[in-house]
Image 1 (cartoon, rainbow, N blue to C red):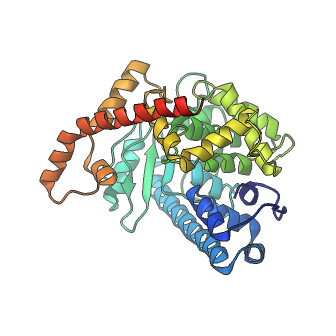
Image 2: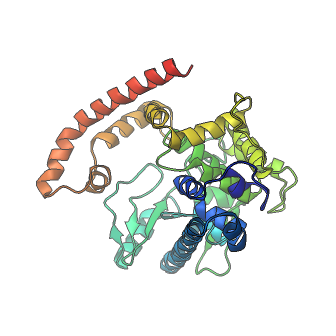
Image 3: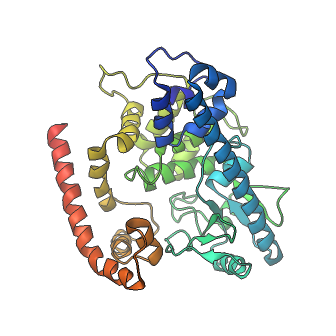
Length: 390
């Protein structure tokens, strides 16, 4: 999976291969569409059995369809914002695809992320709701408004800021701050004023979103997608110039933008891992202890979705500092309150929809006790893991 997703296309794989297991692994880490995009139909058909090869191609086609759908949604949002003279900035998946860093169908996504001016984000949200968009039932977060859904499907998250990307070393970046620092790259083919962040901001956002926000929650986001984004942006090789910027310069600038929330060692490990995987280096030799930050990070990424004990132990990452512009105490209190008091949409997502509206009340009353039970289980597994695996 790693060689085909990141290594030199067509590089020989010497080990034993079970095509079905390869597809399962690729899907588990959300890499199947990337592999199909990089390797092509003929190579996969020659290397895998027909059923597995067809599975990779189906995932690629599904990702391409989703990508086109979200790019169309971006156009609709831009059309709604244009009469308001409201500037927009595409983020993450949409920015990578629209700016040409990611090939269509190579990257999966579940929503469209758009940054609006901090003081006018609600104005954009209301304009979309007036056009028939619906509330999703999920709550607002520090950096974004509650997600909303298109009448024909597709979720859009309107962001007020890029949490953890700090242009001035203080508050997280806004549309206005990106403009002041000349870090916006406009799209001429979209209505109104629509742009993508400069490449170093995209890389910084990938770093802080993957390592800072989801580094301890492997089920919520595959960190291999972070590595894929960084490689697509050109951070895997010092001399790569996807946007007239050497990869080493890109890495240094991106790391500096997120230094408050991603340590220098973590950022260096991510960029080292990009370089190693793109060269096809085997960092998983069974007879070797991980001796570099890249090897440790890779094992962390893989164990997060392959080792149930390890994944459960990381649930205590809730108590670790998270990227935030709020004071630590306020952030922690608000996080606890958000974990205890759930919206209906969150209850449906976590526990499944109850049979009646009264069931929501029961879920809410039971939620504190469920959290205490989970906390005890996570703590026990953490202790057991540390005792068993020093």
